[in-house]
Image (cartoon, rainbow, N blue to C red):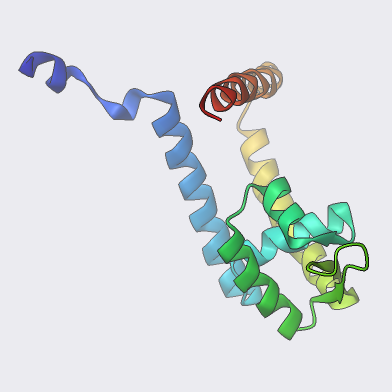
Length: 154
């Protein structure tokens, strides 16, 4: 029994390695966006989603970005206070508000995108053409498997 426990090294597991990489990427984003723009990762993600989807409710942002409702709520309040987004009552669902990016929010989004693009290019340039194609296919396959696994637990 003891032998099997000591042979298990979580650092070699795919989920662990992906999580560590994701944590490092998020930490880099948090540090960079805080220093450059005085915002957090949640605020940047909300601006990115709104720039892509247009006017949507906060719960749609949560779904699209796989984000926590409490974190989104706090970030929305901050962005609205700063004039980066506007809130308005959803006339179809009076219990909900719709969010849209403002011109100043769009300017901030463009600056965030610039930095994000630089980081993305640095990642991509470290891979060969074949590795880039393979990575895209591998990630898609793993996402399909995870969707299946998630279906099993729902």
